[in-house]
Amino acid sequence: MLEIGRRELLTTAGGTLVAATVGAKEAQSARPKKSILYDMLPGAMADRFMLAKDAGFEGIEAPPLTNIGECEKMRAAAERASVSIHSVIFGGWGAPLSSAEPEVIERGMASVRAGLKGAAAMGCDGLLLVPAVVNAKVRYADAWKRSHANIRKLIPAAQEAKVRIDIEEVWNNFLLSPLEFAKYVDDFKSPWVHAYFDVGNVVRFGWPQDWIRTLGRRIRKVHIKDFKGGPGLGTGGEWVNILDGSIDWQEVRKAFEEIGFTGYMTLELGGGNAEYIRDLSRRLDKIIGAA
Image (cartoon, rainbow, N blue to C red; front, side, top):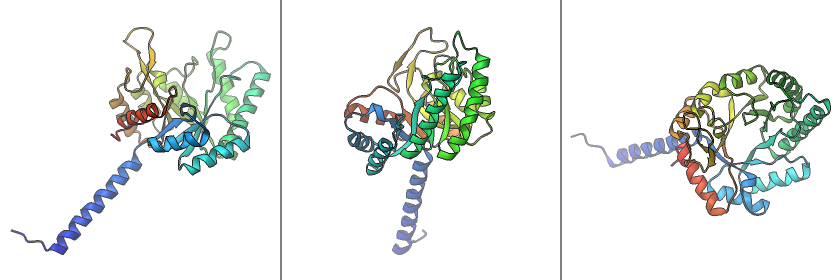
């Protein structure tokens, strides 16, 4: 029998413990980060950030504030709670960059520029943008051409603010396949325009894991919500709590692991009390493989 001295045994055990600890830390840092919408949290500003931290969230997605003083207050509250404001859920529905009306475009462009400045003041690195809206009056091809041209004009403002423009796919009758989404982003040829992928938004007509694998590293941020229904499941459908819908979360997690996604996954659901927020955090742990 091989004899090992006590000092050697302790050294070996200590080395194993250190290796295990380092491995655990590496695994933790390699997983996606947990985030939640600011508007989902109850209470005053400081209380919201403290609850997010206490519930296990690492990040917050802020509303589109443009008053720099308010932005700085928000950032200070986040820093006191040791939570990052990583993104602004800006939108783009009010004055679509695909509009045929010059005054609407002008208003939309000014709004995005102000949003980028506000995002920078809050310490964000991304701003969620709905790029276009297709409807009976706006043709798909025109929406593509106009929105692309207008977003390109916004790239210098994004670069100056050091805030990316992250394009999201929503129910706007636009970017209806992962191949289109990938091309739309690629055509900018800019590090300041990437993809914001919403897992729930594609369930009605596609499979999130397919979109994730196609978009790959273009995805910089993710929205998490769940939908009951989808292809092959009949018409209609409804929004439900995460883990209660039709999404194959195991396959979704596998797809995110394949593309090496370790950015923020932000819950986008209705708000609620502290108990509800903590339950959502536990559910999100199961999705990202932390539980």
